[in-house]
Structure formats: C-alpha cells, structure tokens
Image 1 (cartoon, rainbow, N blue to C red):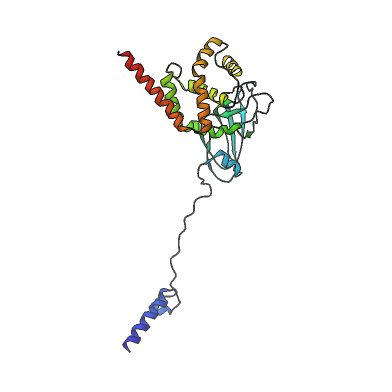
Image 2 (image 1 turned 135 degrees about the vertical axis):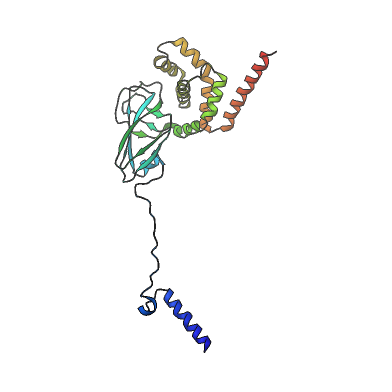
Length: 265
C-alpha cells in the first residue's frame, strides 16, 4: 500500500511538470514552458565580400569613368540590394575602354567601400594601362567591367601579396631609383606592359611622353636599369613563383654585403 501511494504521487508530479491541466486548487492552472527568445540579425547586416562576387549575386552595378590619364580611374558603384554592403575592390579589376584604339585600364590597388542599401558612391583608384601602343584615354564615361587579359587579375593579386618583398628587393638594388610610391607604381606599370607582351618601342614612347616630358635620355637611363627586373618579375607573378622572388631578395642582400666588405678592405 505504501508503494502505491509513492507511485501515485510521482505520477501526479510528472503530469503537472509536463503542462497538463490540473485543478486550479491544486496547481493554479496550466503550467506553460518558458518562451524561447531567438535573436535574429538585422536584415541590413552583411559580411564583407569582393566586388566580383557581389556583381555575380546581383547586389551591385559598377562602371568606370576615365579622368584623361591612364594612371587613375573613377569607379562608380551602386548598391541595388536591400542590404548594407561592405565591399572589397581588388587590384586586377579591368575596365574596357568604350573607344577604339584607346587604352583600357586595370586597377593596381585594393580599396574598401561601404554602401547602404540603394546607395551609389564614386572613388578614384590607381590604375595602369594594358596596351602601350594605343592612345592614352581621354575623359570618357561608362567604362564596363570586363575580364582581365591573360589572367592579369590573378597575377596582380599575387603581386600585391608579395609587394613588400618586391619593394625591398628594388630599394636595395636601386636605392636612387626607388624612393617614393610613384617610383614603385611606375615600375608596376612596366611589369604589366611586359606581362601582356607590349613591345619595347611602345613602352619607351609611353614613358617619354607621359612620364619624362619628352626627355628620351632620362627615360632610357631609368628603363635600362629596371627593365630586366620588370621582365623577370612579370614571369614570376604569372607563375606565382614565391621561391624565385625570395631568391631575388637573397641575391640583392648578398651583393649589398659584398659591397660593404669591399668598402673596408
């Protein structure tokens, strides 16, 4: 009898804890389980993504406006989604010039930009031309984004990842020729020309007209000193050859050490 009483008590407690209605005099009504609070992220939050991916997913539109130079371009982006977007504008994005026989441009630096839903923004980005035999671009609007020639976008991403190493090598080998960001940008332009197979005559003409104000001698002194390195690095970034780049730096360091030793002989 004692066991039956204990069993009945436990069974009643189990029914009560499961939310089954019992008499209000015994339990005070139905026992409801606590509500579960689920926190959701606002619909406007979005993780950073590349501009290319955002275009593929239909979140943005993009075009370029030239500024009368091959050295920079204005990029115009519009957020057509209902999200706030944080975007990564990558070096290697290629804008096709709408005019025939006029240079198309490739971005040579990374930028980040935030766009609220339905917002449009413009930003000016460093660029390089891809065909030295064509005319330098004038002021033209609505350049479409296109596929970069010869996987140049992938190779420029690799260049950016190895940029510190490349700059160390150049500054140690030719400290007089690499003192500013402009010097490194000019070198990268020459690398891009060699990478895409531009001929030496067109490269020298472009540099003479647009960099050295017609001073052929000064242009030749600069290009003759850096052209071999530019050609070598063009091959290395095409092959994504980190070891070859490291070897360049090691060689430059060994030459520096030997120069120092010779100074104290």
